[in-house]
Length: 236
Ligand code: ADP
Ligand code: MG
Image (cartoon, rainbow, N blue to C red; front, side, top):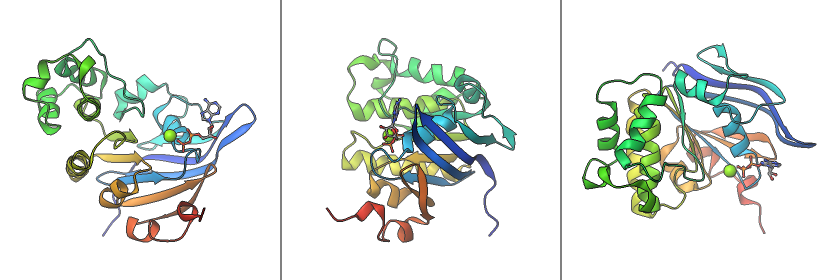
């Protein structure tokens, strides 16, 4: 089987906060139709990597490429326009807008405003009932996560970057999320999931990269990587 085409790639990415090295030479390929996961302990550099790909942290060295084009110096909103959509580890929705209005903002900021993309995103994430007309301000976490995902997806992205999408979700919500994300990948969307919920990753990812101290220390399919002894399982 020929590997799916690379969509988003990182080449020897280095990132620093002052004198502290948060990313120490990361190489990563995110492929169309696949779920790529990045796991690792707190402080490993997962969110920093995510920010370098999304355009909210500028790497000190190395490159980010999208469809072969060097986008290392492109600001975040321009990346969104190209088709790189993201969610936030800390949920970020417009509280005074309704669910449907939040999703419409995503469609407008995205790659193309395809007709019906808002309705489709609402349906896909189970937001097409009465909840669509409610202000986002008072919704429970699980619903807000789905609003964020629907908003990111409504812009018809080529790549979806998800930082801890399972945070604050119960078991049933995590299971439902897995099904939807697998469906998006099956349609050809490239997904990158940064996550410390290893159960989600095991059921979702095609490829897992384990990060530790700013480096990728092992990579492979989840059954191999997550069962192997490594930095995840250092005895206390
Ligand atoms: P993870 O998402 O894997 O928990 P992060 O990328 O958030 O890791 O953080 C990696 C390291 O960089 C941590 O040691 C963290 O304290 C540090 N760090 C993250 N953001 C900043 C920042 N804005 N300023 C200084 N240090 C930071
Ligand atoms: Mg993080």
